[in-house]
Every structure is written in structure tokens, then in C-alpha cells.
Image (cartoon, rainbow, N blue to C red; front, side, top):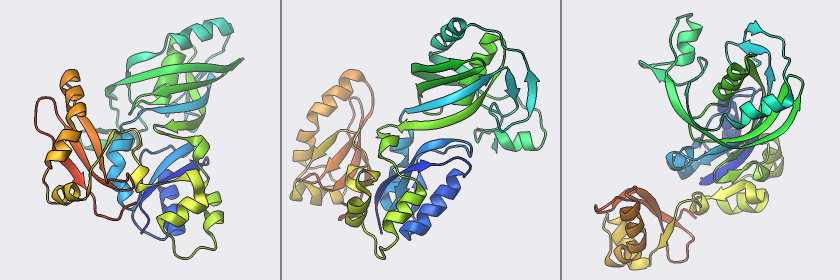
Length: 318
């Protein structure tokens, strides 16, 4: 079985589920997941998880994302994007400078309603299920954070920008907010995910490209994928580069697998623990073997408390 992360450049039209199914067939294993969905109309980076890589989902889902997208002023739809039913049309007569000002001022922490057509749950049901049943519901508000805006083009009613956001932020909701501020309404026309930290679209391949590179290979393993797919495949041991790492030796590893924290490991964690105590924020740490080629475990360091294992991984996951 292959363990790690595969970076896929999703094309428009397909669902995130269809991408996962396609990768299952190519790799030849059932243990395939992802760290963040993309709507069918959306394109760009999908972080696909293979084997024990599926156990790392929470540590990748929490990270920020960046997008390049185009939206149309003057059109409002029920889905907040071009796939929905048009519910309002307005003439657009705005200067580019006025639009730029609103865009620039629409950054930071903003409390916005989640889209009615979304998988966010309310009272045990997903929002889109209420909508499909024609039930009137008030979407919950959610704190979202938007930053690093780059205005790429403003041409008549079409606007193209790049924008980064926190986990769980909806670009569609941000576009709708901009449309409200401008008094014209707006809907999303095109969306491309550029980054799902710490990974970027430039390292990804389409499903078709991955299939073509592996078409003649019958028995796949991590070493072969690394050779054939280069930066598109990230081995399990390197799947969490954004999380600080501490290395341990053989005897410490043996104690670790027995659920014990060795004296040496405690000593190696002292600097991180000081930082955690100072910032009063919990921190996750990777425990690596002596040559940094295997990820042995994930630990949680807590302010002024003893550390604990979050997960211990089987040996041999390179």
C-alpha cells in the first residue's frame, strides 16, 4: 500500500468524490481520501491522502488556502455562483477605483452567512438538503478571515482577484458581500485553488497526467511514485512539513511504541514546551526517527501540562 500525499490539479465539472475514485483506480487501493473539497465548478489544487496519509487529514484541513477567481457584478444567484438560479439583475455603472476601494476594505475577520448550498450542518442536516427540500432557513453566521488580496483585472462587470483565507471561509460568501457593498450584487464565475498550505498548485498534476505516468506500472509503492511523479507525490514522512519535528534514536523509539515518553525525548521537547507555555497555545509536534526518514508519532504539547501522544504510526512508513 502507498502512504502519503498526492497533489491533484482538479479540472472543472467533476466532483471531489469523483477525483478520489479516479485516484483509487489508478493507485489500486481503497485507502484514499482528501483534505478539503472543491465544488464541481471549481478547479485547482486538491490534496489527496493515500494510505496512512488519511490519518493526517485534520492536520492539513486546518491550514489556510489561496484562490484566484473571477466574479460578475450585477447578477445574484441562489447558489452565489454561476451554476445557480438568477434571482436578481442590476445594471453596473461603477468606476474601477470605486470597486478597488470596496475590494481592499473587504479584508480581515468578517462574520458572514454560510452559503445555502453548502455542506455545513444545522440541526443535523446539511444546508443544501434544506434548500433542495424548499425549506426556508436562516444560514448561520461564521467568522471568516480574508487577506493578501491582489486585484488582477477589472473590466466592466467582470472582476478577477487572488485572495487567501482561513479554514472554513467561503469565497462565494465574500463575493456576495462585495456585491452588496457595491449595490449591484455579484456571483462567482470561476474559481481556482492555488494553495492549500503548505502545498501549492504548481506541484500538482491532473488525474489524467498521473494515470499516463503510471500506466505501465503494475506494483506501486512510495519509492516508485516519488520517482515517477516527482514533487506531485509527498511521502508519508514528509507530509506535514509545516509542523515542527523532533528526532529520536532507536531506544527512544522503542519506548515511544510502548506509549512512553523517554527522558531524551522530554529533553528534546523542552524548547518547544517553553514556547507553548509562553504563548499559552497548544502545539503539535512530529516525532521523527534518528535519520528523519520516518514519522513515528504526533504529540500534543499543552501549556503547563504534560505532553501526550495524539497518534503513533506503524514502523516502515517512509
